[in-house]
Image (cartoon, rainbow, N blue to C red; front, top):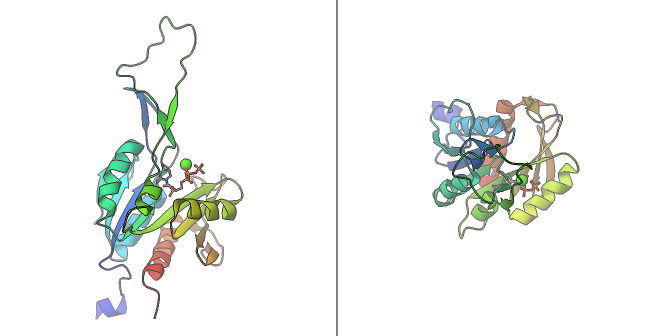
Length: 227
Ligand code: CTP
Ligand code: CA
């Protein structure tokens, strides 16, 4: 009876989520990272679990508690995230890429701490591009339903549409900043094959957990359209 009164829209659905920043080492004590808090991905993991999904959360370096009932795998670099996600993706029905994956890493990793002594000029670092995890998952022979994120500082709808096409994913979730980056309440823009829609529909900012629950509802609706 309880199940009938509160049906779980994602019961039996396996969802893989990436969250947080990545850390690209320069030497044993230094690296390149970004300010992603991981909160959106962790909120989606919690909301998806509440909706009945089996959730695997691949997290970059963040200090957040693992949502109850969620399987968490911690990684540091984009390459490690890629190597965990790619084999796991085939065992999941949905892939939600919220991680702020570093686009580049230092081309060479110094085995020892780079020392200042004796150097007359500051060191420079060559960077090399990291693989696009979302595009790689979307290119699998039988990909899970892929949801990408696009954090932009301008032309949100246009950039989100372009990312959707470039990465060949059915759904992109746009987030316009920088005023809202790192804040707890926000609105999103969903871009799919049918066009664009604000989330929530009334455009009133919601906190990340409420937004995550709305987004999980939207994803569930796209997996099993109402008959
Ligand atoms: N993404 C990924 N692997 C990467 C880069 C991005 O999986 N190496 C994913 C992100 O998790 C996000 C989506 O791709 O879901 C878009 O990331 P974004 O940084 O906005 O796109 P980029 O293609 O890197 O474009 P740019 O940073 O130039 O805007
Ligand atoms: Ca990027």
